[in-house]
Length: 237
Image (cartoon, rainbow, N blue to C red):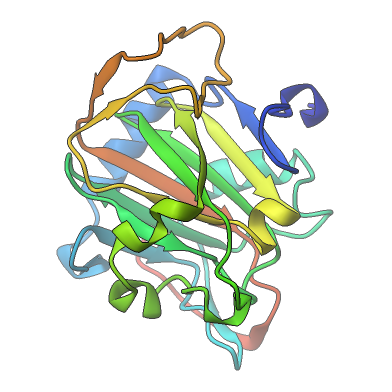
């Protein structure tokens, strides 16, 4: 698949959006698999819970864990788009957002290859983008400092745009959209479409002023962690 035809022209460089990247049946199977894992696999944060697959990214290197087959199907499917420039997708973060939950604006940081790919399940969301702080080194990073970052209202003056993500879609962002501009999800139970909302899926038209009610959304963020340790750990499948 040539992803250039899925470029979101209205966004800053570079965003790709593929609607219906997976089927309804695949979505159902993924949700069943995610909710059938042992409870200890879930990590509860203040505003969401998550599952970490592939290992825990660390500046000294990630101890690589084998991905379960039900996830490898989709990491391979993403790899085939060549978004990691020939590298293997070796990490998947599964986030569960109930209606009203979100994540503060952040950068994913240098632990990952500078490309984010995310599959959405079950519900839409608005993914918001923000200009960086005056000192980019102060921008909050994911998985840690983000939970203690300043209140989201402090980001309002730097808000740029929102991308409307529908269930079963794949969004990819890289270059400045990875390295410079922060992304986050507001804590709200509904979203109102505005002139700053980009809806790249023309088959699901929305009008300015339209209100969309959220339900529980699951996201699969598939990435490549460049720095890994040589030994591997087994994993419950």
